[in-house]
Length: 163
Image (cartoon, rainbow, N blue to C red; front, top):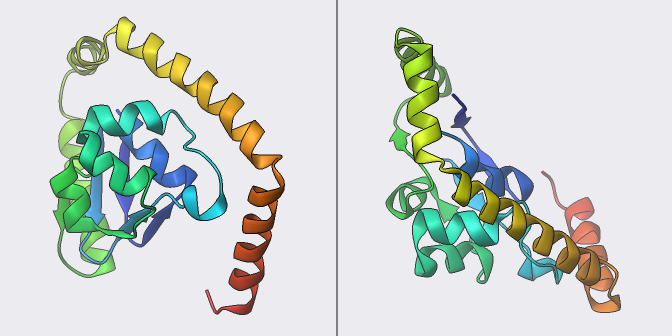
């Protein structure tokens, strides 16, 4: 079982991988973003496949095309997040650990079989194929002059801000 606990920002690669987790818990103040368009790039991590399948096209495009900074509650409504958990950072972590400990009481074989049923091989093949297509497209865009300029502008701006 893969469990993600997001208690801050989930940007880019970290965000695109969340659709591959079995359970995703987010703190109330957490937010999510895939800034591909802001950088002149294309989706990666098979997110052009997993996001529409997880969230539907309209919600996925908020991430993949609009590059919006999406709050935890909206990510929950979209289906990217399993549950938004209120509380302090310590309370959030304790609640996620409690959920993980509860899962650990289940039959490992049952969990494995249930996960295999929900991740049918045909879906995995489509997922992998989309990842290959994204890799080719990302390489093409990353080597383009306009994308290089956009990434440089982004990193220059990030270097001047307090993160």
